[in-house]
Length: 182
Image (cartoon, rainbow, N blue to C red; front, side, top):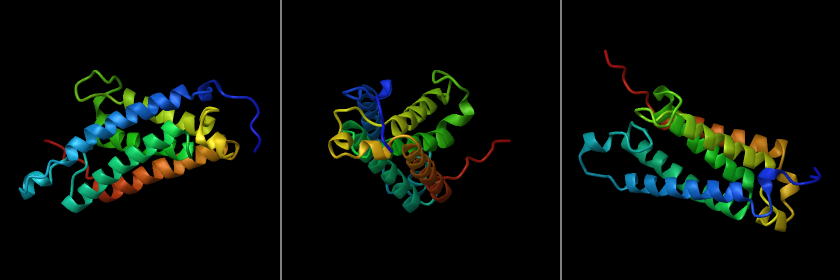
């Protein structure tokens, strides 16, 4: 696929991808802080962490660790503009998990009690747009001649299959809906 012209999203420096990478990096730092909470108390160690994952400790730890690695690798991919659709997929997947585990029942606005879902969906859509539009001209995808092969429908498929698919697998393995209170 030959790509003519540049999207405003994919400007020379890829400002959108750099800002999204910065947000993902900060989010990874918050998740890392929650990962160190291991008390040795079986009941407390089974409690949900920052991600809202709960269940058998081994699955929760693997799930949270997987999210952390995804955030770090996805953030670096976006920052460098290297395999950008995979970086977009990382954001889509992470935000899908955040939506399901923490935000979906709290209304739209982020400032509502419990934090609504507007912010996580905005980040997910931004990740999807970057996967489709591709990185800026000053990216490793461009330098390695990969950009034109990864933008458009290809980027969309990668972001949806890897991002949403990965989130679905993680949620199926390591998330249990909270019990409804009577």
